[in-house]
Length: 149
Image 1 (cartoon, rainbow, N blue to C red):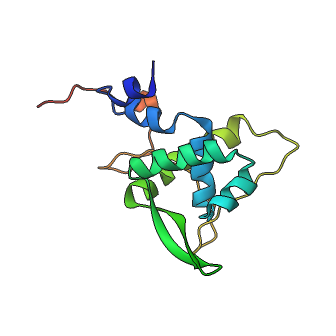
Image 2: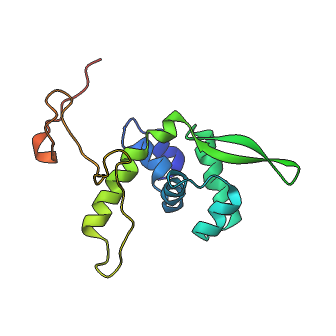
């Protein structure tokens, strides 16, 4: 199934999967959340080809996840990439993947970086909870019902 086919699915998981399902896109978003903003910095930190990087950035720009912001360097106007509100809303998605990866796929001999709350120093993790009672939920706690129009 092509990107266009997934992107047009009437599914709130299929459409995001079409956008985020390519590994370079997720790694690019990781770098953006870590503070990388400039093309050359993405390329050197990720060891990604210019053509693949250009393609992934263009998709994120077209989808409204990123915006280009001008800055001055060497007397020339260049652009850096910043998250839009839509892009910033992807943070919990990446945190959920990271939390799962830390639990199930992190090699024991490798230490990863840690994330801490700026104000209190507590560890950061993804959490799914009920909007009414704030109980933390698993898939077994959720009932799926069709949407009413």
